[in-house]
Structures are given as C-alpha cells and as structure tokens.
Image (tube, rainbow, N blue to C red):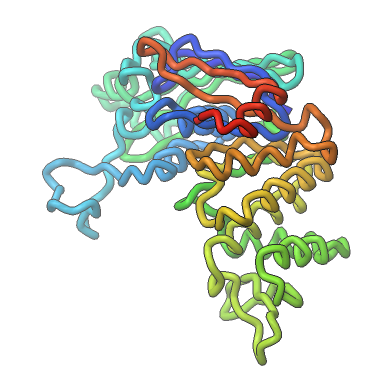
Length: 376
C-alpha cells in the first residue's frame, strides 16, 4: 500500500509531500491544483519500465501526436502519408515543472515504511559518451556526426532505487522512434496499476480476460451481484468471442445477450472497477473524476462496493472528484462497517503559488459533512 508520496519538479508540484494515504483515498480541490497530475505521477512511477508510458500519460490528457510543422494541415490529425515527429518537449518535457528540463523530476513513494525513489533527468555530455560505447550499432548509426547532438537533445535518464534494488536506463529518441536502453532484464515492479477516467478505460478484450479468470475460479456471481445494484434486471454475464474479438455480454432476460457497450457508461465503469480489483488482487486503481457516469443516488452504494472490494482483494484506490454528492456519499466508508484506517480525504490547495495538501481526520471529515461545511 502507498502511504506517502513526495514530488519535486513534477508539473505543478515543487517540494510537495502528501501522507495519510490509505487503501481508499479521495482527493479534491479547485481546478488546476494538480489532482490529475498527482495520479499521473504515481502511474509514471509504476509504469516507468515501459517506453509507452509517456504516450499513455499524454493520452490521459488527450494530447494529440505531434508532427513536423511543415506537415501541419490545420487539424489535429496528420496526413496519412506524413510521419509523426517525436520531440522531448511533447513526450516528457511538460512533466518537468515549467518545462525546465535542467531540474530533475523526483518521485518518491513510500509503501508502508519502504522508500522508493524515481529520478528523471535530461542526460549530460558525460552520460552520452558512456551510452555511445554500448549502443547497439544495428539500431543507431554511430557514424552519424549529429548523433551526439541528437542524443543530448533527446535522451532521458531514469534512475530507480528502493531498499532492495536499483535500476538505471535511458529513453532515447532517435530516427523518429523511442528506444529503451538497456532493455529491461528484470521486472522490479510487481504492482498491477490501472488508470481510469472518462476517456481512459479497460479495453473489452482485457475485461473479457479478467472475467474469464473470475468465472474460472467460480466467482462470477460476485460481479453479477455488483452489477445488479445498478441494474436489477441483470441475470447473467458471459465472455463471448465474436468475429475474433472477446467481449463481455449481459443477459437481462431478452431473447439474446447484449454487449456490455450497449449499456450506459455507469455500468461499463462499474464493470471496469469491479473486474480490475476482483481479478487482480493487490491492484492499484487511479480513478480520475470517480463520480462521472453515476447518478448521485447511486454514489453511496458505489463507495460501499469499492470499500468491500478494497478490503476483500487488498487493493488500493486513489480517486479524485469535484462532486459534492460524491464527497458526502463517501462518508459510508467511515461507518462501523469498515476499518477506521480504510478511508481518508485530502484536499489540494494553491497557497501562494505552492500546492499544499490539507489533511482531514475521519472525525473532522464526518463533522464537516454533517454540518454542511464546504470541503472541496
């Protein structure tokens, strides 16, 4: 379980520290105080070993691919015949505070009392010559006189360290492609992480895979019971392959089962949350705007479901919201049904251009909710 996060020079965060992170942590605050950025920093930390982590983070923000200005035709999409042009500013430059790549990004995460650190740095000349000595010649043209300049401008150094392991590697932009060097030989990260938002979701094929695991273990009834809380007519759920694609189908008593996507966003989102946790024990879910897609009357039940799942599967959920009803409904997690240390609420504030976390005890949170004190 993550218990504390420290950020330095990551987006809007400078010398930022937040503790009291619990199995279920709800984060709120005004616009542009870093709620989404905080979730993204955690995703970057755990997904660091995959070079597509930067593409995923950009997708979270719906940042379109960048290509050479000469190819720009006035739309977000490049012409089919034109290549994408990868640049460090587009890929990772905007993760650095004020886009200043001269200051390292530091992400420190504590899992209980175990400190882990991740440092992202623009490489220096001394590092470049070290890389040149060990670059695979079949990928890089070592005779290219501009190679050193290219690497200095387009290389990111990643340093990871915890109490047992350390790892150091480079992400290199060369020939309009991104390379990880050296290639990963060990998997230090053993945390399953999933980011969800209104435009980022678990693909149908992956959901079907999760469901198959659940069904194989005789536990599909758990998902059915959860979905019935939002749609009582549901009788059964199945993973079915049609035309080469695996998808989830739902039986509501009609002559034929219906694909999950036929149903509303709420059922889809609840299915993604439930299947991710049920099929991946000890999962880490990062959910941006958790209330979106759900009617306010369902929100207390949503929090109860998440509380039950987190407790059963030993999973962790960090979520954001602007919604007052969502905030009020989360009070169910500090009832006698759940352990006192299951839930915490944290508000992010911008105080004199510095992002600060405001921590609330469960007693303070409950008092504020019951007395209609504004917490957002």
